[in-house]
Image 1 (cartoon, chains in turn brown, red, purple, green):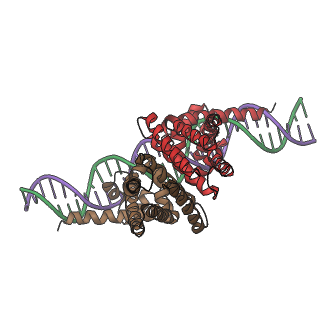
Image 2 (cartoon, protein in one colour):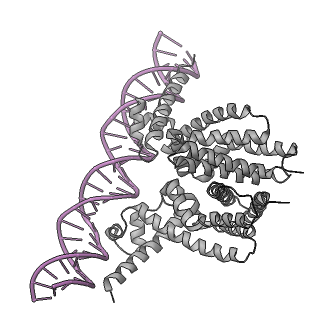
Image 3 (tube, chains in turn purple, orange, cyan, yellow):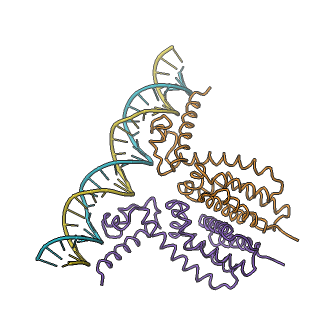
Length: 196
Length: 196
DNA sequence: AATAAAACCGACTGTTGGTCGGTAAATACC
DNA sequence: GGTATTTACCGACCAACAGTCGGTTTTATT
């Protein structure tokens, strides 16, 4: 077996695990590279051997958190039958998950702050946002909503969802807030539905 | 005349002007307190005498840029007659203005990054977002859209608009992108309009 | 066994946000 | 009008931290 590769993978994972915990609990700014190295049980040099900068570490963590989140959402959305309904359910799960704790800290707070909005959006779109355009296109195809350019509409809806997530994250009664926004979101999406 | 007050105002303004220029052109991270002090023609101590931290300076700058922007938007929106139409026009101006240069850097990039999303949203809402809930409430009152909780819907729309602004900012052909998003936004808002 | 390459170490450096003791200007008080 | 106090301003200094670099150990290649 490629011993070097194993070693590399083990160290990298240790760093990423430690970093994920620290970034999630303390935030990006308050987390130091020395802290990450120490928590991972390696020297700072090792961290810099695997990651070029602190931002690179964060980006890797961000990516992994996103991946996990998407997996959760997928299973939730798959339960619904109507495309529009799945959108609502999926997004609802999205901001329920990001509303609290480490996930929210990494995805919603530091994410855009550290990576810059464009970069953040690109990664976010790769994981999660990519689903929205597809869902919308499908909804048009199925005649559920009026035909129009997909991309702009998807962006607007993604923005709305993200905003809802942030708003929820900032409130004490998350459950109630989540329900409120879910209702508003449903009303927005349903408004798009063609009636005859 | 209160000499001390004048002195204070002059120094503060010099700092703010310098900071606004630097933040706008170089971004928050690349701008140093020494740089601001130097550009303002004062010592670093003076800056810290008037502002507790670097973030405090940024917040003041952010506030002033927002205020200017809102003034612009207001005059644009006032030209429209229908409340929904005014919303569309106003938001269109919003992301046309934030799409390029220093304003976008301060409002859309560093704003959320530096202040944190909640803080950013709060200030943004005070200047700009506060108009949306009012407009929506008015629209309901006028029977243009269905009655429902105002706040959540306003949030969603604000998120959509902000997202559109960011998306525009990231594209080369701003004019075309702006038009696209304006159209999508109109379609979204118009979908809410009650038909009978 | 010898050589090369990759992983890892930790002392060191440069930059920068923020502090602090001190000076000058304005105001309050008698 | 002179003294005390408060406010504006100065700039050397400090601590923290991201990132560097020469050196050491472990694995791969020949």
